[in-house]
Length: 408
Ligand code: ARG
Image 1 (tube, rainbow, N blue to C red):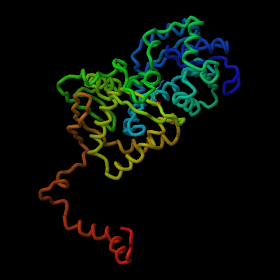
Image 2 (spheres, rainbow, N blue to C red):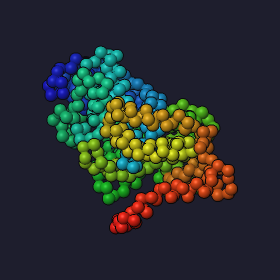
Image 3 (cartoon, rainbow, N blue to C red):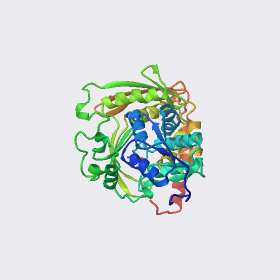
Image 4 (cartoon, helix red, strand yellow):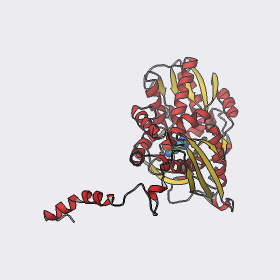
């Protein structure tokens, strides 16, 4: 046995998607450990036929299959807290995949508890980020459980090896995904594409490869106005209709897809330091990012607003690195959430040909005060006070000049 704890598992819960890696993993785990195996299928709104995956798991030899609908929990307890932080990894990536893993792993541990399993397994590769997110979560929530990572144990070195094993073992592949010349990860928030035909960062994605949002060439000629309503930092409705967390994401997803919103083609730095070229399509996230900041901009104390901007990259790196359940993420979240209590109101966006513009925002807690900002006469600000502020703030320049300083 070469799993981390060097013990023979009695019962494994495998996070199963029905794709190549987890299908091979299921057959391989049964063959290698000869123990009970529960296939766990997480519904994060990936929009695939989950009963097809469930039947497949059974056919491949799972003793039991559990399909769990995690969509509302994903939206409310994972996506929204991250959106309250306006988190972007390396300035651009909305982390639709990064934020999915801790929930899948946490739900997998719940299933392990329910079925009395002593081991958990995932199909993420030994080079990637997802293994870290799974295993950081396992370690943070249940450090004693046995973790099996087939990609780090088995003799297969490539996707080609997996395909050969699948062929030998009668593992049927859904041709539409088996043929796809890239790796894909989809959920309620986004679709991520990477690898294979996308590996040369100089070349644009081949036509027809990206399927979630409309190509800008095919978007409607007319712009569309979207109003998003927030309560304490969370989106709670769209265009006057109150919605569940899932409902908000689905509604904005549909609008964003139509107008080609949220497509991003980047080279990013993985946790292990290698660069990868990734394409993402996150229509609802792009709309929410702009809308949330618009409402927030009216409400936050200026020092709080600026400190929040400074904390954001740290927070984003924690999410990217799988540290969702680490104390430092929870600490930052508490600070962020403290700032969000009054972030209630509406943002008005205009979307057109792949672009998002903020065109209006309002809040009952707005600190925006025309009396202060106006160029006309007012009775809240005495312009003579500025003289004292400037006089005191420039002491150092006069002192430097008197000392004959050469620093300018
Ligand atoms: N590079 C992205 C991230 O680390 C996407 C990972 C997508 N996962 C996948 N199995 N294709 O968040």
